[in-house]
Image 1 (tube, rainbow, N blue to C red):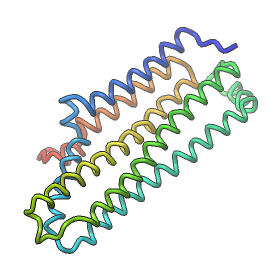
Image 2 (tube, rainbow, N blue to C red):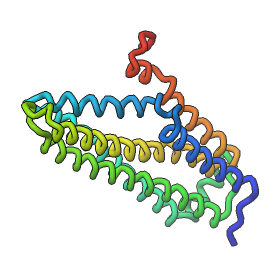
Image 3 (cartoon, helix red, strand yellow):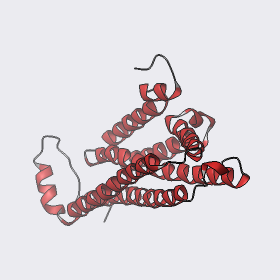
Image 4 (cartoon, one colour):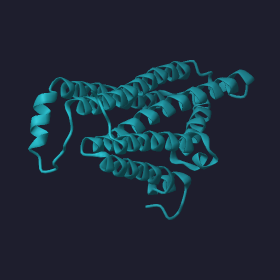
Length: 231
């Protein structure tokens, strides 16, 4: 029978709450509007507005293809990671015998190990769906770019409306990509649970701090925001 200790349940709850709270902070609070992701959303809109003024748009389509290829890479990687997690699930006895000899001294039952592996697989499946949907949305954006009105029509209401629709779809594609990448990062923190509940809480906190720093205090954000102190 599967039984988790109170400490394991607390650690798992901490992981879920930390993930949810960070996502809400970045995507649904005024503080999140100062993040690096939010700044890039603004540049997506600027890109679409300036693209409308250009007659030759080959460079824009090349950039779009690069974004699609990057998203496809992460989607493929998530599938490989899911396969690795399922392999761990199939080879539980062999893995446990190896883990038992490690200096970390990990003590866990077969049922607990399988539950942890299933949890990891669920996170990776979530990441795959986010990346796959982002890739699909980027395909839609490419179609919208192909349907962009000519530069001679840039001041018409129809052209402006098309720019807004394309920018909104572009932003949505980026948001799903960000969610998939966030799941990848937190999956690394989740690996701490295989060592123990305290390590899970510590690794989760460390990952959240690193993600927060990159979004709100990194030199990358300073550069995008135009801070002269950026390097």
